[in-house]
Amino acid sequence: MKTARIKRHGIPWWGYLLFVVLAAFVLFRAFRERANSAKAAQPPSRPVLVAKVITKDVPLYLDEIGTCSAYETVQVQAQVSGQIMARHFQDGADVKQSDLLFTIDPRPYQAALDQAQGQLAQAQSQLILDQITLKRQQELRARNVISPQDLDTAQATVKSDEAKVKTAEGAVAAAQVNLDYCNIRSPINGRAGLRLVDVGNVVTGGNGGGGGAVLLTIQGLDPIYTDFTVAETDLALVRRYLGGPNVKVETRSADGSMPPRLGDLYFIDTAVQPGAGTVKARAVTPNPDHALWPLEFVRVRFILDLFKDATLVPSQAVQISQNGPFVFVVKPDNTVDLRRVKPGQRQDGDMTVLQSGVQPGETVVVTGQLALAPGTKVDPKPYNAPNGPEGGQVAAKAPM
Picture 1 (cartoon, rainbow, N blue to C red):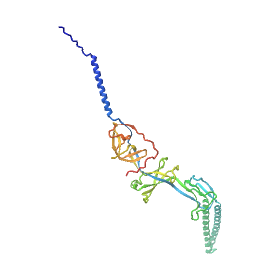
Picture 2: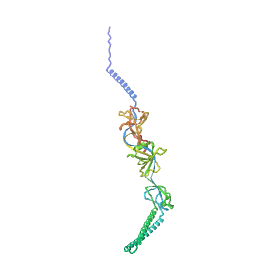
Picture 3: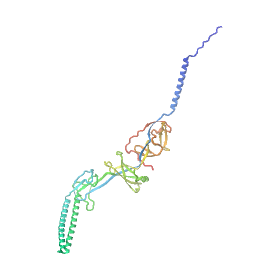
Picture 4: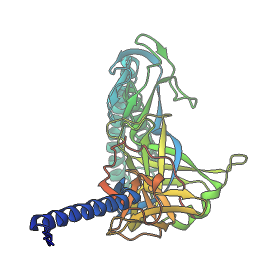
């Protein structure tokens, strides 16, 4: 019987290699799919704009509405009667103190002055003559030639002559004043209004005790008054700082076209206006370029004090929830933390004072808060504040 020989065939080495490669590929695919699945389950970083918490000296203030009024208002009146011979200014022109405005016909007053000067010369001549006579009478009386009565008469005559000279001197001075009044000059620095008389008109003077004809009104515009009111509810705060070194008044144009002008508080009333619930106040504001005009409406910032190193964040960073104001603070790992804050006043430059809740140098989210929650990962980008018009902030009342 033949014995069959069975031939065994083994697995070649490259077969093992192929198996290892395939196994590694399968494991790599499984690991990558698992990693992608985990990555897909993790939410993406939220893009936000952020800004640093800064410190700055800021004012404590009240924002009010006011008007301007002339610092001085003078009605130029005629002091003597006569015909207007000349006008020396243009309507609406700026005039200086002592500038010539009108000329009244001086001829009658020049004649009166000449007459008074002639009478004064006569009185002085008579006084000299009577003084010589008195001297002779005194010599004769010393030799006992004349009676004492003659000497007394001579002395009385001299005294009378001296009085007449004084009277004549007064008449000359009065005539000179009337002549000077023919040249009507500006009593203040200011701006002339519309003239009320023209050349050729005859005006009545005011030397008789009544007011003379009004020729012109001049208003002083530099400085200028800023008039405003303070609400009765703010009086306690105002009284706390009134008289302090930092009390100032900023006057701003209604359209923001003019930089704020810093002036001094001049007056605050001592009583509340009945029915209005406000107290009148007035400030003196520099106005060298006459940019502010009487009766012009202006925005007024009544500065009461200056806070040193106040903590500031962009106003958009402060959000409101049912639990109160808060901000999102970005931590070093780019996750956010919700902080409760206590806002103060809003300041120029779209910044808000925070009295508590954050520290200088921390980073807060300015925009993009809607999709955030504590612990959310963010992708922070710097916030660039827009340059708004000067004084374009919403009016704010100071916290009590």
